Length: 118
Image (cartoon, rainbow, N blue to C red; front, side, top):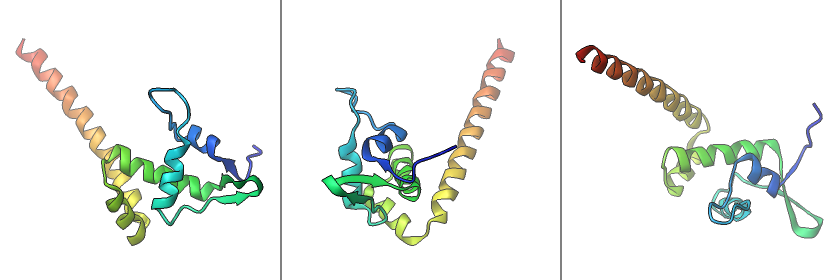
């Protein structure tokens, strides 16, 4: 598969599914905001002042999005985590997956108990 080395800001917004709920358009402003907040993000800016992101930047953006949107962390908390160590993010991701599995199993058991009572 021939993948481009850099992706435009709109391509990255599409990858991250950053869509404005009101207008249905891509929210590239979110990426520009995160770029100002997180020093780990350093897109290449070529002629025409257009931003281009490499795969490493996209992975950092995915982690930031996960921590902010899925885990409900604050920007300050995500900054601390990114500055302290990158492995903590993977651990949080794994714990989240385990918690979802446990929750699903508990719901199944609860449903079975209800059926047995009836």
